[in-house]
Length: 338
Ligand code: PEP
Ligand code: MN
Image 1 (cartoon, rainbow, N blue to C red):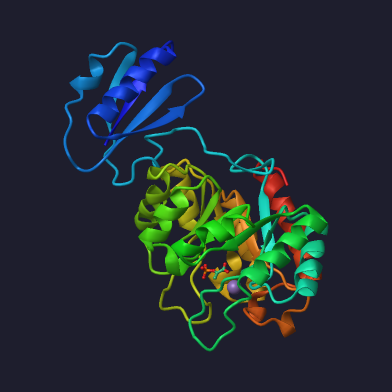
Image 2 (cartoon, rainbow, N blue to C red):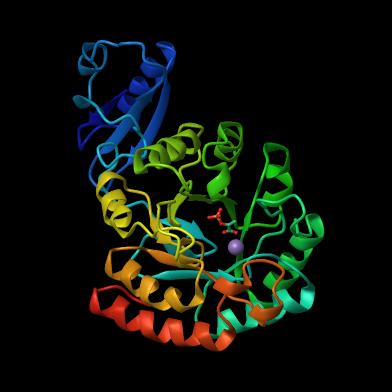
């Protein structure tokens, strides 16, 4: 893959000529309009193309190969940060965006209580699983479409946008009728059929790092979504498996700063699944924001003791309010808004 960098004064016609040439050669053009220059990614298989087929076209400034295995997700392709817009909320900009709510949608009352509480404390997006990926087939599997209806009702009541998980390609259409952001969970990070399906719609996608995946594999999974035409991808560090047993996973804070350097995509942190321990949520949230994360994904339940799923790592509304107050101080200290 290579990128064709257009001259700052290149015309729409010249850009069109380059796009036509890319398509004629059997590749897919990916346009990125920067503040000064337009860049066109030439994406296809490993087949070689001579850079001169583009350098001879008028308006072309340079043709540069991208050497990283992920292309459209790389900073080489796009140097400016990507901002993902969700109903006027911008993820990846100066403001820290917090998504919060229960692990699973259990009832209308539970979701409404959680939604009102997280909204009051400053969350902008409500989370909650309707389709749950459970390790055991005997665990609560979620309410399915009924859960989506409950999320919709909470959105109407509070104005919060919704993020919820989609487990399989056949459900992408259904879930996207309710969700503002489609979540791909850790267990599905390399479900390539699912990644391709969410790549074909234009709803934002929250892609969580697999529990045994490298940063490069995460970025290659993002590439599946981007290369199918959906550029609205938010990455999420949610901890990886290590030999440590006192925490559910090990939060890889270095991944946040690393991804910000390697990629233009926004990155958020989920300290709830990363630690599995409600007492660790506050310190890890502070560390995440200090380390450059663009937002947080936090499990909050109106009554964690009664939760059907992940209660031990869920904050109650008071705990969440305290978290927001403390994280705000860090956000302001590192030049972000909250
Ligand atoms: C979740 O956020 O609901 C979830 C199941 O997390 P993960 O996919 O990171 O385990
Ligand atoms: Mn959970």
